Amino acid sequence: MRPRSVTEALRLPPARFLRSWWPWRSLVYLLTGGVLGLAVGAVLLGLLVLGVLLSVLVVGLAAFLAAALSGIVVARIERRRVRIVDDVRLTDPHRPPARPGLRGWLFARMGEPATWRELGYTMLMTSALCWLDGMIVAVWAWGVSALVCGPLYIRDSPLSLTLAGSVFGLVLGVVLLYPMSAWAAARAAITQAVLGPRMETDARLTEVARSRARLVDAFEVERRRIERDLHDGAQQRLLALSMQLGLARLELPGSSPAAEPVARAYELAKEALAELRELIRGVHPKILADRGLHAALREVADRAPLPVDVEAALPDRLPAAVEACAYFVVVEALANVAKHSGATRARVVASTAAGRLTVQVRDDGRGGADPARGSGLSGLADRVAAAGGTVALASPAGGPTVVHVELPCGS
Image 1 (tube, one colour):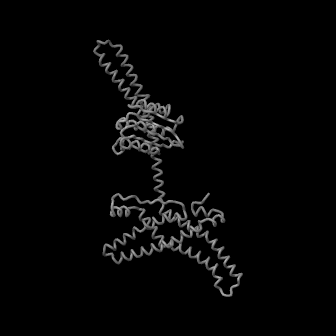
Image 2 (cartoon, helix red, strand yellow):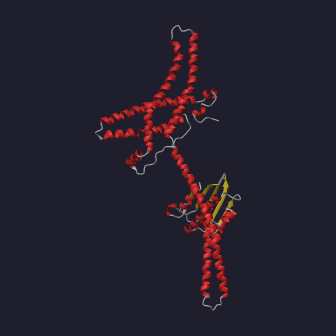
Image 3 (cartoon, one colour):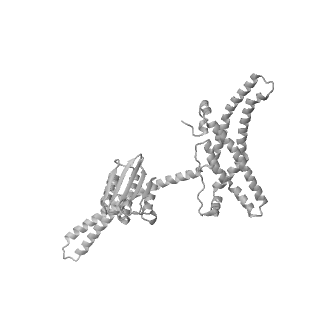
């Protein structure tokens, strides 16, 4: 396998390492590091001297400010330069300023810890690292050239001594490529440790993602518990009440004063039972838990106020959280179609491929859907994002509107 960094290249057999470009890339990395460090040091020294001399004027304060922010430029160069010895892309930690203009940019940068971390790295580079880079390159170049070419300048030098010195110089130059490359690897590691992504930030983001997944799972478990309690408790009692009122209505003669109130109570109980069943279906549909996403989507299509075609090429069952998310996405999308699109027909297509569930809802309405107008699309996107999926919306003026959702459905 091709090494992606000089650190990996150093583990190769000597013949492969010496035939590769990594030793020479290390040489270029250290050489440019020394030159860059000396140049930055000279610029910083000039800015500090200018700031001291003109400290009573605004120009002096600007020089001090430029010196403080110089680390931003140096860090940007270093993040690119580190790719000479390591195929890694270090991201820029700076965020876009909240306010436009130079003042907003200055306030944003001066308040970021990354700015001061980059300044510290700049001071370390100009005071120590660049000198070490230059010293190692100079020792390697001087030692090799002195041993290879030195005997040629010694008068009356025997030919055997000349050849021996030249050969020894070449061998020493090859051997010294190892410590030089090792220092280049260490130098790149220092750069990545200081200027790379913060490990604590990555860990915090990972924990946030995991906690969000746990909240989604806990929420889904709670939805199922509520659905069971409503189905097995309140719905059964309301059904029993409706049956008792029906029997009472049959027993009462039509001329009885209680006949009309009992009949009205019976109708109200039936309406409450129908509303409760609709509520249970909205909390967590029983057909989804019992028969899976395919059957649940067909039931949603049957209950929709407009014709809906369903095409679903799905396995028998998917993970419960994925099925629930996809189901409610379709329910919300079809509700938006009925309320806002003016469509006469809709289509739902669901399929799985490469460990992902793809759901697409299309209508022939007027288009122009905008999540910012509170049409429910933003909530739909939040639900999908919590499940680790993505949402794409296409809704040009005049239609059609297409909602494309992808959800990871691996085990």
